[in-house]
Length: 63
Image (cartoon, rainbow, N blue to C red):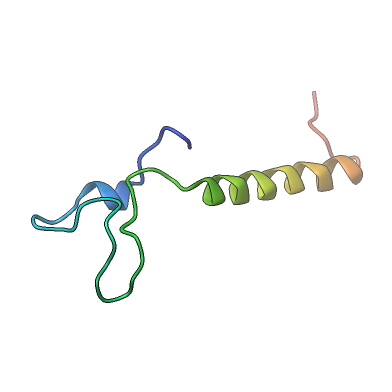
């Protein structure tokens, strides 16, 4: 996910604000084309929780 682009952000309209600039209406920064560290950490947290739950309940991988 660190290297993958966000598909919705690849198709920017012509004349869109530059990445990293600030929106004059909302005061928020324009989002970049990569996933934010917070998004990646949230995904990892869910994934680790999923496996911890299954290991705790002894429902690990079957061979």
